[in-house]
Structure formats: structure tokens, C-alpha cells
Length: 231
Image (cartoon, rainbow, N blue to C red; front, side, top):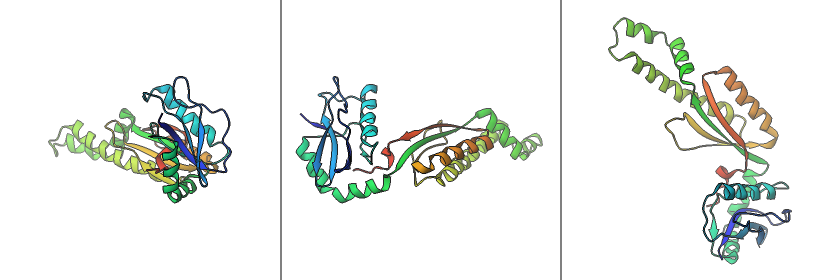
């Protein structure tokens, strides 16, 4: 049976007993050791599908194993032919994994998705750029007024995305950008030291209070998947 891998930790780290992972019934988690590293593993289900229950089980293993230390998390769905192959990879990429664990130790990630409140941002744009109305009313520009406003909103969107990244990034150890989406100004991932979590969250609240046309969806703290770089 193939081996499912959840994450990598230092070999001397205490791993709680009795953790259960993916599968139906859930597979018990075991440690596969090589030198001073340990991989958190279980038997892989015969058919591995990203069901909600298995996604939660994967995350549960990473969180529980990391309560007393650092776990370099792998994303859902990582499998290996067997435990021996897992141990060989730990040995081969030993220095890389240790370095990445040092980078994420004591930190969690937060995801912040940013978008505009449509009505509010149009009001902001018109207040900041009254010339849009005067140019259109005076016949200086034949472009439909709605298009002029849409262009200004798009420009504002780029500056707002940069603002959010700059303000929140000041409280983070690292920032990663997610893929662009049509309905989002930005999809940002922040690696935040646990001691700075409060100031990060307060900075986000302050940003939204100061810029009422912004809307965000913030998720976290989460294991630092976006900064693990286990490939």
C-alpha cells in the first residue's frame, strides 16, 4: 500500500499519540524517520479524493503534530510508493527541509482576499477625481461616463491592492501572491510570527476602518503551506 505524507518535523519533536488521518475509516498516523527528520505518514486510501472530510483530516494532523514544535506541511494528496522511499527522500533533501523548517518556525500563515465594495469605491473615485464629471459634462471627452469611472476604479484597484500588501506586509516575515481572479483585487498570503499576530490583525482592522470601500476575507492562522517549499 502506498504511503500518504502529511508533513515533516524534527525527529526529536514530540508527536502526539493516536492521531488519525485521511481515509474511511481514518488511517492511523505513524512516524517515518531518517536521521534527524521525521515524516508524518499513514497508509494512503485506495482512492484518494479531495473530500472535505479528508482535507480536514490532513489539516488536523499537521496542526496536532505542530502543537509542540514545527511541522513543515505538505499539501493534500502527497503520496509515496512506500515508507522506504519517504525515508530516502528525507535523507536526500535533508538540508533543504531543515532550512525551510527554520524559516517557518514559530510562524503561521494568513490569507487575505481583497475586493471593492462597488458602490463605495465609485463614490470614492468621484470624490477624489471630480474632473471626471466635469470633463464628461463639458463635452471634453466623448467616452461614456460609466467607462471613465470604470477605468478610474480599475486604477484605484491596483493601488489598493498594493496598499494592502504594503501595510500588512510590514507585520509579516514574508508575503506570497496568489493567482489573479476576476472578482479580486488581490489574493495575498502572509507568513506571520505568532508574537506579531495581534498587531497584524489590528493593522487589518485599521486598514478597513480607514478605507471603507475595501472588503476583505481573511483566513488564519493556518499551517504555512504557502511558504513550505517542500518540492
